[in-house]
Length: 402
Ligand SMILES: Cc1cc2nc3c(=O)[nH]c(=O)nc-3n(C[C@H](O)[C@H](O)[C@H](O)COP(=O)(O)OP(=O)(O)OC[C@H]3O[C@@H](n4cnc5c(N)ncnc54)[C@H](O)[C@@H]3O)c2cc1C
Image 1 (cartoon, rainbow, N blue to C red):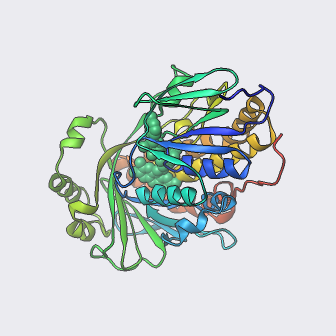
Image 2: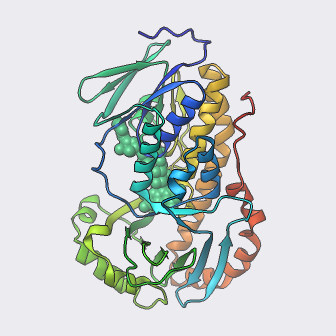
Image 3: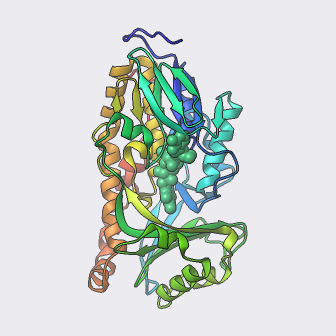
């Protein structure tokens, strides 16, 4: 039975969700002297491997704080360059990694979670699988989590790392906003074969096509790709019920007039490595991040659409920042300091990605303006100096939280 003085530092934590934020939060809490147990709804090996996810230098820097960066970079494709093209094949701009920062790594999304879980478990973090969190009682001195198998677990605090459809978010604020649809659906895959394309030499090619957006990276042996298709509205059942063959045919049609690797890749994609369509969503502003002894991090608090390439990195940064605050401060002050350190930054990332989404869903006239103006803007606004607010951000773990 926990009986924690309201002003004392937390010693134990329940972490709900074993995606990205959860394992990193547990590792960081442990480093801060707080014993954390992760509860994940799914059983290991039941999730999909996922499409390509770019882990940015700032995310890798934060992961280094808990010693988990190598677990990902050893397996990912180093991707120091993003090359943006128009549908006609013209290069609109390039974003290069700064030489003094860790190199962006591309890794399948599901595999990243698996590797982080493995690293956390090997470091002594208990991870309990097949435990779906349903409710929590905050006694004022502890939190009791309830699971769908009618079991409970008690600790000094509870951290909701349960993703964009967070149950924890609804418990601390029943009026919390729901995910916002971006107007784009995403599909893709990551295959252990070249998929008909050659090594991109560390570049992730992104194409603002005439009708849709396409990206791919390959190290000659493994290839990751994704497509963002503008769909004004969608219905989940229709998306889920659409066959692999239908999606491939639709994408072949949408990318037919572009100069990109899309058609070669679509010729080689097999159902085994294909990630079916899902709506791309974000959460531009979640007003309540904590209440009592419960707090949110990662997509549960600040989901950005994939266009930022920063969702996982933001989740990792928030995990490390929250643990630093809990190391030094009693729970209510720690939650306040964490939110103060994080809110402006994550909401700026989310807003930047929302602007990119508008460019991806541009109609023919807007697309002509976009292709004409983008080189001008990219040359000025995507230099390492201008991107430093995103990529060069670091968390000083040793600095006392105030
Ligand atoms: C198509 C796509 C492409 C993306 N590309 C990028 C990219 O290139 N770069 C990037 O940085 N980010 C990218 N992202 C975003 C990134 O995946 C997320 O920001 C990141 O996974 C957030 O981590 P999280 O731990 O907060 O949530 P999640 O990774 O969603 O993990 C949540 C976990 O909680 C578990 N869970 C949920 N409910 C419960 C419950 N009730 N009880 C117990 N467990 C529960 C889930 O099973 C899951 O394991 C992309 C996202 C998508 C959809």
